[in-house]
Length: 310
Image 1 (tube, one colour):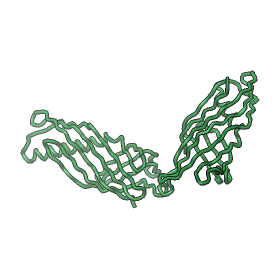
Image 2 (tube, helix red, strand yellow):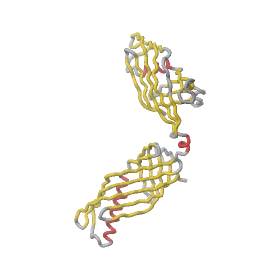
Image 3 (spheres, helix red, strand yellow):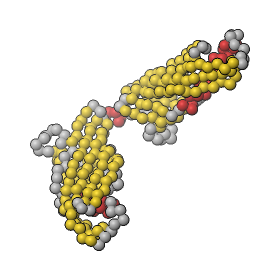
Image 4 (tube, helix red, strand yellow):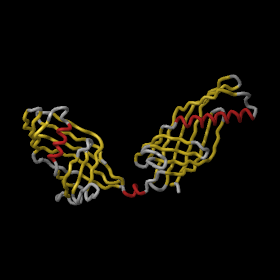
């Protein structure tokens, strides 16, 4: 899977471009009808550029290959019609392309990277809105992507069991610590009806927390569940005030209000081995205590290292 752009320009006529996700298939691939040393690139518009390839003879072992298009005329014909913007394009003839297509590959501990930057030119004749055109077409392709290491793919875990330590604190009142267990699901997970980039947490208290996540390397950032945290924090503040009431430190309290001021939640994943969760919430709290409005600040920290669920 690659990200990049396709730019096609016709001298003295016009140009068009597409940007987005592309898919590169390398043969042998029975599903895509590719034999050994054949390739197929599906661009953001769904058009297919096919060809053959071989390793550059002057760069053996350096991950540089010569890609030769074999359906260049059909591909440019499809692109011309796609970019015509209402014009009538007929009688298209595309000459043999000139230029080099030298993608580069490199194996790293993260996987196999692929980079392509090429320019191809060819003679182009067509009838556009009834007018014969004899020109030259230039096609530029820029694309890059990473195929993750096979080991990481095989050991991808979507369900983690995480024993946690939770620390609640509120200035002027005190702190409270307890232990718990979370079940964390990272999408895509068909059984949990989670799409890629979605997560769900089940707590041992019966609470369900949902949101979205993004991942960069081993780091996972969780987001979008502030609303689910508010009842937990409000309950803690009320229980803390009830404790003070029971101890005779205060008389009555009412109208407890909590507002989150900052929330960060990340996890560090060792593929197929462990996950380390760190969540921190800062919040403001207020309540009417013995007829007077009292304000305070507090925090909640949840940490834990989990294992793949059995």
